Image 1 (spheres, rainbow, N blue to C red):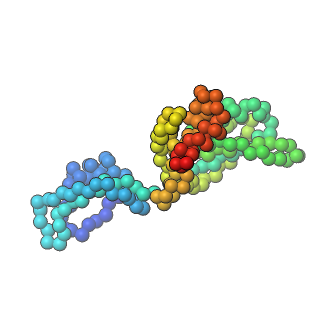
Image 2: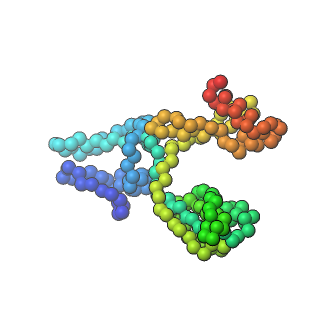
Image 3: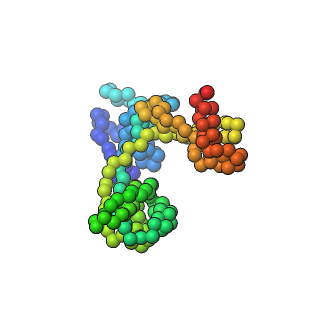
Length: 216
């Protein structure tokens, strides 16, 4: 039941984990990562029938949410230089890269050898998507070489709320650092749709919603 899971020997001379308990943990709990801090929502206790002279036969279970300062994980930056391709192709290539699993795609202007203007095609993706990304690059662009760089990506903890506005309910994205809100903004695409539907400048819609969120 616990094959492949991290275990630690306890300080008692009898079996303290039942097969049922082990099965529940193996199925429902991520035992490979311990959160730095948690916010406890509920606590439950269970008492066994077997007595022990050194430790109580007691089980305590927490229902809690993790308190993350930020989310960090490994990712890849994939790059290639292009100086001999029709620039109109980049829109289609970007769409195909996102379909292949890219988290972000962006272009950088460079001057290549012999003074030729060129483009760096930059792709950020999670580990595991690199083969599909490279297939798109080699089949859709004129590049003959790719550079891959592993790096660590840290992002703020984000939550999404629905806020009632004169335009209807709007999705608001809130970002947190050390449990403190450091950023708050409405979703751009929803602001854009409201602007188009009402014949308003998108910046006016955005600022009116921001004023409502900030209580102004």
